[in-house]
Length: 152
Image (cartoon, rainbow, N blue to C red):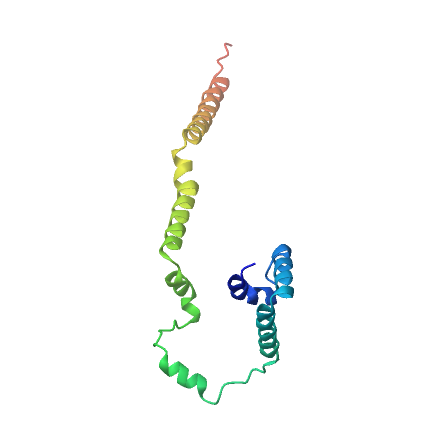
Protein backbone atom coordinates (compact mmCIF):
# COMPACT_ATOMS: atom_id res chain seq x y z
CA UNK A 1 0.00 0.00 0.00
CA UNK A 2 1.16 3.52 -0.82
CA UNK A 3 1.96 5.73 2.24
CA UNK A 4 0.85 8.92 0.46
CA UNK A 5 -2.57 7.43 -0.32
CA UNK A 6 -2.91 6.21 3.27
CA UNK A 7 -2.06 9.63 4.74
CA UNK A 8 -4.68 11.28 2.52
CA UNK A 9 -7.36 8.78 3.59
CA UNK A 10 -6.35 8.28 7.22
CA UNK A 11 -9.04 10.67 8.47
CA UNK A 12 -11.72 8.59 6.78
CA UNK A 13 -10.20 5.50 8.43
CA UNK A 14 -10.40 7.12 11.89
CA UNK A 15 -14.01 8.24 11.25
CA UNK A 16 -14.97 4.70 10.19
CA UNK A 17 -15.90 5.67 6.64
CA UNK A 18 -13.96 2.85 4.94
CA UNK A 19 -15.31 -0.48 3.79
CA UNK A 20 -14.10 -3.70 5.42
CA UNK A 21 -11.47 -4.63 2.84
CA UNK A 22 -9.89 -1.16 2.75
CA UNK A 23 -9.81 -1.04 6.56
CA UNK A 24 -8.13 -4.45 6.63
CA UNK A 25 -5.47 -3.32 4.13
CA UNK A 26 -4.82 -0.12 6.12
CA UNK A 27 -4.45 -2.12 9.37
CA UNK A 28 -2.00 -4.43 7.69
CA UNK A 29 0.02 -1.47 6.38
CA UNK A 30 -0.01 0.24 9.80
CA UNK A 31 1.50 -2.87 11.41
CA UNK A 32 4.42 -2.69 8.99
CA UNK A 33 4.93 1.10 8.58
CA UNK A 34 6.06 3.04 11.68
CA UNK A 35 5.70 6.45 10.02
CA UNK A 36 2.06 5.84 9.10
CA UNK A 37 1.36 4.44 12.59
CA UNK A 38 2.78 7.62 14.12
CA UNK A 39 0.55 9.69 11.80
CA UNK A 40 -2.48 7.61 12.90
CA UNK A 41 -1.73 8.18 16.61
CA UNK A 42 -1.49 11.95 16.07
CA UNK A 43 -4.74 12.01 14.15
CA UNK A 44 -6.49 9.94 16.84
CA UNK A 45 -5.33 12.41 19.51
CA UNK A 46 -6.71 15.32 17.52
CA UNK A 47 -9.94 13.40 17.00
CA UNK A 48 -10.31 12.73 20.76
CA UNK A 49 -9.51 16.35 21.66
CA UNK A 50 -12.06 17.67 19.19
CA UNK A 51 -14.74 15.54 20.83
CA UNK A 52 -13.80 16.90 24.25
CA UNK A 53 -13.84 20.54 23.20
CA UNK A 54 -16.49 22.54 25.01
CA UNK A 55 -18.47 24.95 22.92
CA UNK A 56 -18.42 28.43 24.39
CA UNK A 57 -21.24 30.86 23.73
CA UNK A 58 -20.23 33.92 21.71
CA UNK A 59 -19.35 37.13 23.48
CA UNK A 60 -22.02 39.70 24.19
CA UNK A 61 -23.39 41.70 21.25
CA UNK A 62 -21.85 39.25 18.77
CA UNK A 63 -25.14 38.74 16.94
CA UNK A 64 -25.85 42.47 16.85
CA UNK A 65 -22.49 43.12 15.19
CA UNK A 66 -23.05 40.24 12.79
CA UNK A 67 -26.50 41.50 11.84
CA UNK A 68 -25.08 44.96 11.16
CA UNK A 69 -22.53 43.48 8.74
CA UNK A 70 -25.07 41.41 6.81
CA UNK A 71 -26.87 42.97 3.84
CA UNK A 72 -30.34 44.32 4.52
CA UNK A 73 -33.15 42.00 3.53
CA UNK A 74 -36.73 43.12 3.17
CA UNK A 75 -39.07 41.15 5.33
CA UNK A 76 -42.62 40.32 4.36
CA UNK A 77 -45.10 41.74 6.84
CA UNK A 78 -47.72 39.19 7.71
CA UNK A 79 -51.13 40.76 8.06
CA UNK A 80 -54.21 38.73 8.83
CA UNK A 81 -56.16 39.93 5.82
CA UNK A 82 -53.25 39.50 3.39
CA UNK A 83 -52.31 35.89 4.03
CA UNK A 84 -53.29 34.67 0.57
CA UNK A 85 -51.62 37.67 -1.08
CA UNK A 86 -48.35 36.88 0.72
CA UNK A 87 -48.60 33.22 -0.27
CA UNK A 88 -49.22 34.22 -3.89
CA UNK A 89 -46.21 36.57 -3.87
CA UNK A 90 -43.99 33.86 -2.39
CA UNK A 91 -44.96 31.29 -5.03
CA UNK A 92 -42.56 30.73 -7.92
CA UNK A 93 -43.81 31.47 -11.45
CA UNK A 94 -44.38 27.78 -12.19
CA UNK A 95 -46.59 27.41 -9.13
CA UNK A 96 -48.69 30.40 -10.11
CA UNK A 97 -49.11 29.03 -13.63
CA UNK A 98 -50.15 25.62 -12.30
CA UNK A 99 -52.78 27.17 -10.03
CA UNK A 100 -54.22 29.29 -12.84
CA UNK A 101 -54.37 26.30 -15.20
CA UNK A 102 -56.09 24.27 -12.48
CA UNK A 103 -58.72 26.96 -11.91
CA UNK A 104 -59.34 27.27 -15.65
CA UNK A 105 -59.68 23.49 -15.96
CA UNK A 106 -62.14 23.31 -13.06
CA UNK A 107 -64.25 26.10 -14.56
CA UNK A 108 -64.23 24.47 -17.96
CA UNK A 109 -65.19 21.03 -16.66
CA UNK A 110 -67.88 22.25 -14.29
CA UNK A 111 -69.50 25.10 -16.25
CA UNK A 112 -68.64 25.09 -19.93
CA UNK A 113 -68.21 21.41 -20.81
CA UNK A 114 -71.66 20.24 -19.63
CA UNK A 115 -73.28 22.87 -21.88
CA UNK A 116 -71.24 21.77 -24.86
CA UNK A 117 -72.09 18.13 -24.45
CA UNK A 118 -74.50 17.02 -27.20
CA UNK A 119 -76.00 14.27 -25.03
CA UNK A 120 -77.24 16.68 -22.39
CA UNK A 121 -78.69 18.97 -25.07
CA UNK A 122 -80.58 16.09 -26.67
CA UNK A 123 -81.94 14.90 -23.32
CA UNK A 124 -83.08 18.40 -22.42
CA UNK A 125 -84.74 18.85 -25.81
CA UNK A 126 -86.38 15.42 -25.57
CA UNK A 127 -87.73 16.22 -22.12
CA UNK A 128 -89.21 19.53 -23.30
CA UNK A 129 -90.77 17.91 -26.36
CA UNK A 130 -92.19 15.11 -24.26
CA UNK A 131 -93.75 17.51 -21.76
CA UNK A 132 -95.22 19.59 -24.58
CA UNK A 133 -96.70 16.51 -26.22
CA UNK A 134 -98.28 15.43 -22.92
CA UNK A 135 -99.89 18.86 -22.54
CA UNK A 136 -101.27 18.82 -26.06
CA UNK A 137 -102.63 15.31 -25.62
CA UNK A 138 -104.48 16.22 -22.47
CA UNK A 139 -105.85 19.39 -24.05
CA UNK A 140 -106.99 17.55 -27.16
CA UNK A 141 -108.31 14.58 -25.19
CA UNK A 142 -110.49 16.50 -22.76
CA UNK A 143 -112.58 18.47 -25.19
CA UNK A 144 -113.14 15.41 -27.33
CA UNK A 145 -114.71 13.47 -24.50
CA UNK A 146 -116.88 16.36 -23.38
CA UNK A 147 -118.15 17.17 -26.86
CA UNK A 148 -119.83 13.88 -27.49
CA UNK A 149 -123.02 14.56 -29.33
CA UNK A 150 -126.04 12.55 -28.49
CA UNK A 151 -129.09 12.36 -30.62
CA UNK A 152 -132.46 12.45 -28.89
